[in-house]
Image (cartoon, rainbow over the protein chains, first blue to last red):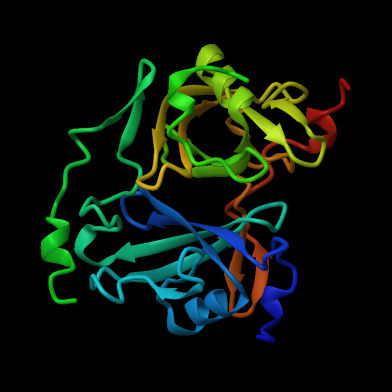
Length: 133
Length: 133
């Protein structure tokens, strides 16, 4: 169990997780939301790079470990209920999404349809991003 | 069960919920994160005002119903995994937090302590906000 004191006031879920929102520190764009456990937040604070907990893979996920699209932490905020964390980050490559877009939030509700927004363009082909794997 | 088609692609939790981040449409400030069920998202879309699901009260929560601090919806976005919603809102009163602050994210990690940031000032005393109840 990681012992850093700043982890204790946080309200973790039954699975020991907390939602973490990543926001671009410069543009203010919301890039993604993922989950952290105690160890991932402790590693994030210590390394100043975002480390999440991958629920699908059930392991620590150092953001950018395969893509190179690391998130450098500028500041970490906590909400009034102590149950959501907000990371202000500098996004390496300007791409947070595995689809090659700046932000994971690229689908907009237009009428009653979710539409991939043209202004949220693919900056780099995912095949190219992950080609070295 | 609400039947709007745009609800179907969303990945709801086992409890039928999805996280919803509210961001100020003008300033880009992240205001809060709460949860929605199908009915609350349907009401949000229909009324163009944010309606969440209160997990503590286990009921629909029309944001601003007691405070007057309604959130007018400008646009709704969905992430690449279809499991997080992002609301771009105009925040009535410029106050989203029940503590009387603009944003719920007012605690910053300074060293190893969470500190209520002076720049995230209390705009209105909560006693005044909720005095009519």
